[in-house]
Length: 85
View 1 (cartoon, rainbow, N blue to C red):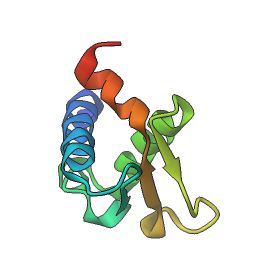
View 2 (cartoon, rainbow, N blue to C red):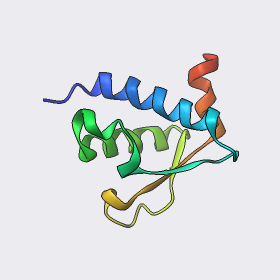
View 3 (tube, rainbow, N blue to C red):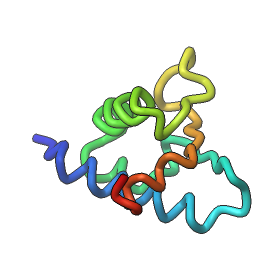
């Protein structure tokens, strides 16, 4: 059984790290390259990615494809997690 709350916090921290280390204002990462997938699998990770997209923290650039092929663009609003907004 997946602990979605733990996955959420791990994913949030991973996305913040990627954003802070990026050389571009809108970094992109493939869903399969996220280490968070190891915690609960790609399907559960995709669920949280959709949740974060709904709140404007991410954009999925190829959502019409299978979720295994998704590429996620991290938006500047991800800094809300760090800045407490």
